[in-house]
Image 1 (cartoon, rainbow, N blue to C red):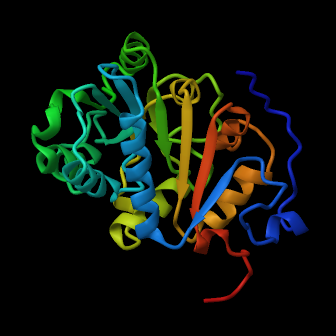
Image 2: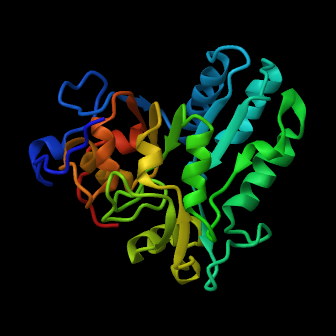
Image 3: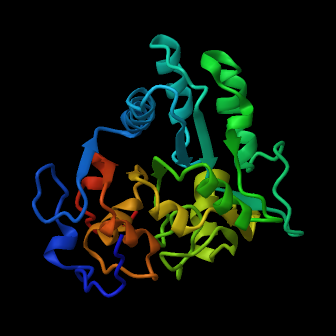
Length: 281
């Protein structure tokens, strides 16, 4: 696919930037759906996962890149599969990233901030071996050899669908700005913006406890996915979504590269779609 980094975009504060995002609005760079709230968004992610597996040819593997954030879609996916059984034996889940300790090792799964630990509780243990699922179908990047993650994905035939959120400074996974469209999986120093935002979400504002580094799947593996499905549900993503839809396509906002993907869709909550009117609180 052709990826540009010189699109002029629309300046913050312009009429386009501040307008409410509505279904059918003709100037959106990405097809955008709006759901009522977080709960509906989680169900929509679960349904997209379910349909992607159900629609795949029989016996074919189905490969996803998946996030921890949004977080609560996995229990809903399990509910769907239990109610409407689906063969999961060919499913392969490549999780995006993991926080690292100061020595460069991945957080222990027992750490409350560990993405792997969250997935072990919310997905692996909760699903067990029902419907042909096997914990060996779940992968995380190894900080000791992040390049092996890209090699594994390529050897597996590439990714069918990448599910993702967008960080406050435009990161996909933990590809902090600046990140090129062809950047590989690697260990990344997290910006203060990311640590403060994640500290607000996960630690009640105690952002200093957010690790300083993470291992992340690269932009190349994300953008090479056959489909991209982006989800935004946090109030501060009002600005993020407008940068994604109207800002320049640039390494300075890595998520903007999805604008040139042939099969990308964005789903946001009504709160994110609302006009970002200034107000002191």
